[in-house]
Image (cartoon, rainbow, N blue to C red):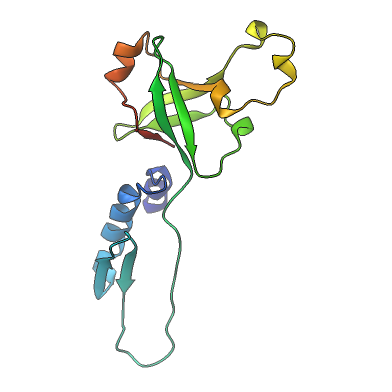
Length: 151
């Protein structure tokens, strides 16, 4: 169950609190010392004073994600990448946005609406949007806000 929770938690770079809290709660009963430094790194120590070899497990908590940068009048969301993401792999992917994990789907201009020259170009982030099913910006703003992150 822990791996499922960990896999579904949001940990977009610089916003790893949800991941950190899950790990902290999971390891707390099994360690002698548990602390977070000023950069947000989590340290769990067990048997520090015992003689013999020591083992360190190091892993990053962050993941790539998307940050909402604009809410269009039609309710669609514009976004920027957080980390290295290839925009070509995003079309039709589901995403979860913000603390409430609002469900959205990444989309692009429909093929039948594209000009012939657009059909041969590689999509960039400016060509993509997230659809959360909102009919307009007022409805969308009730669900998400600019600066929310999506995974």
